[in-house]
Amino acid sequence: AKAEGRGTHRFYESGMGAEVRGRRLMEHELRTAVARGEMSLVYQPQLAVATGTIVGFEALLRWNRPAHGFVSPALFIPVAEETGTILQIGDWVLRTACAEAAGWRVPLRVAVNVSAVQLHAPGFADSVEAVLAETGIDPRRLELEVTETALIRDITRALAALTRLKQLGVKIAMDDFGTGYSSLSNLRAFPFDRIKIDGSFVQSVDANQQASAIVRAILELGRGLDLAILAEGVETKAELGFLGAELCDEVQGYLLGRPAPIETFAAATRGEAAD
Ligand code: C2E
Ligand code: CA
Ligand code: CA
Ligand code: CA
Image (cartoon, rainbow, N blue to C red):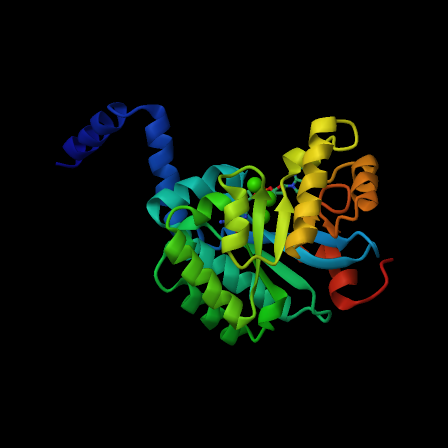
């Protein structure tokens, strides 16, 4: 029976494409990744342009997958979303980021990415409230980053969840602005505090006329709607110079700091001068 079982298994596997098999295996491994301690967070600094100081950090998820090494979240988050595992992973991200931030001596902001699946799950606002209570972090230090695509799934439900979170004092940022749908009506309908200009517009903003026109327009829009603006993906001094001249509020990108374990930024979180 044992031999037969193995044969059956082999037959079943060879009947699937390699891609499907790889995907199933990833789905399977993702289910236990948190419990096995394979997930971790790195942090990327967010700086105020006017002062050049760090005002917050975005938490970014890293998966150290057995036999693969670090897998990009761009590859595994869509898989976790399809299977629903993102709910468990997202909860871990939120709890870990808030717990870590609660331990910083300087009360900097911590920004956490929220998937559409989380945002639309019943009880999402409750779970955030529970994490806030558990970790004791000031809700005003927590910023949730949501994409436009995440909102349009079920506008009523997304709006209800975000409105409740706002009432708790949590900040909301629109991530990847300019890359999704119906940006302008969403900006009006939802209680955003900040717009994050997608890196694709920021890159070569100093050299490309279309990119610079778009970034200028978003900055103007932000001023008109009283929203703070953060430019993502800043890689060069020329890009930073342009954003400073155009009075962009905050910047984030490789030029200012790559995502790294929080210990890397101990000078900022402890309020000591860097050595
Ligand atoms: P995102 O939220 O737009 O995050 C910014 C991505 O750009 C990060 O990639 C970051 O490492 C990268 N980046 C930062 N500065 C620069 C730069 O100057 N140039 C370039 N080319 N890239 C830069 P990462 O960490 O690979 O994350 C990719 C995406 O995965 C994120 O895009 C976000 O959508 C998703 N993600 C990451 N962590 C989480 C999480 O905890 N939960 C959820 N739901 N999604 C996450
Ligand atoms: Ca983000
Ligand atoms: Ca982004
Ligand atoms: Ca993105």
